[in-house]
Image (cartoon, rainbow, N blue to C red; front, side, top):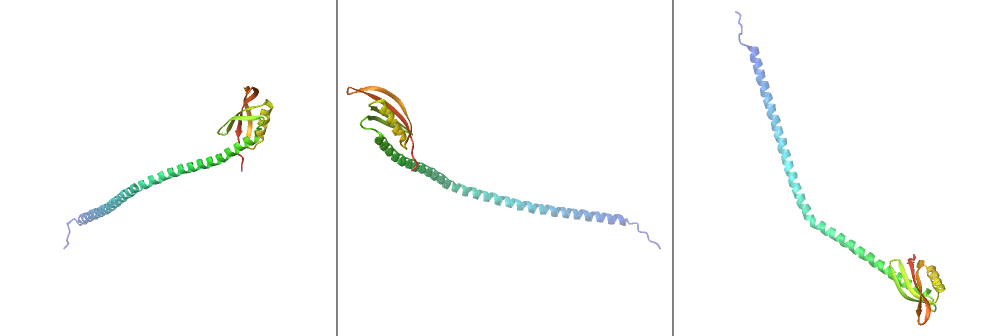
Amino acid sequence: MIRINLLPVKQLKKSQRIKKEIGIFFASLLGVLALLAIIAFSLASTVSTLKSDIAALEQKKKSYDSILKQIAQLQKDKQALEAKLEAIKTLQANSQVTVRLLDEVASRTPTNRLWLTSLQQSGSRLQLQGVALDNETIAQYMQQLEASEYFKSTDLSGSSQTVIAGKKLKSFTLTTTVIVPNT
């Protein structure tokens, strides 16, 4: 006798295979979701660690702010002191030059024909006022001043006749440029 199997074997196998594939799909989907959850948790942990590190570094930076302010103040104080030292050096150099200028003026002034009444220095300009016997004496005095290494371009600013003790004399004003020679 022949037996005929009327059960749908192919359909049963097919439905079992589909169930198996759906199970594998959901299992792999759960695996992927679990992996993503682990990665997200790891990244969240790293982010929180980095945030706490940033907060600690900000706190440390704030602790250094007072030190940075002190350093900035010390730098300002240093610059002020350097400026004062430079001013002192300049004053010392200029005081020596002023003494030398007065010596040059005194040594080049003919005492029996010319008398100085005023001497004013402002910066590199020196103004001399005085009285001389005549114009020739003033011209010679100007040449002697220009011959000095401390003076250049001596100019006669003004000259007029004046009477002193019954004598007619020449009142004059000279302006010269002061040069500091290299020593």
